[in-house]
Image (cartoon, rainbow, N blue to C red; front, top):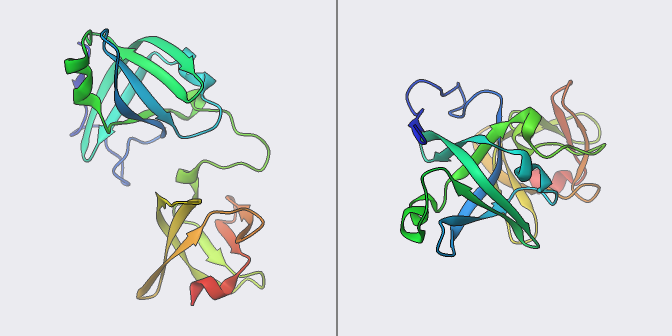
Length: 184
């Protein structure tokens, strides 16, 4: 079976499958053969060439899919799923996130982190004062925005390293906010 519904039995405590990372999002159908343009979530999207089986996520829906073709273009990968051979069939996948095992995601360079690993970190100022907990993230115009909850308030922190975000220590579970005024 090409597309297997995983929505019921494979979700973890955080609503995503444990051990998987979102590596891109299907943007739109392309061409007559059922290709899909993908917005990669990293600058290096060469790992798409080696992907075979992936999980697709949209809302609470999860399904497995098999990639049978992949072409790398300047603005991102184009993929085709098994059983999808027309633009009409391909359009049904617009907006789905593509999830892969961490071992198949884009490799990190020194000092880089997967955004999903920042969820749950304690945000502290340079003196170690607690300023909240990272709850989620969204795309902003200039940078990714981390949603931080502090007591009964919520604020958004631009994820700009060495401007607003300093040291990230996953083992200690902390992220240093260089500009504590953003938490006010």
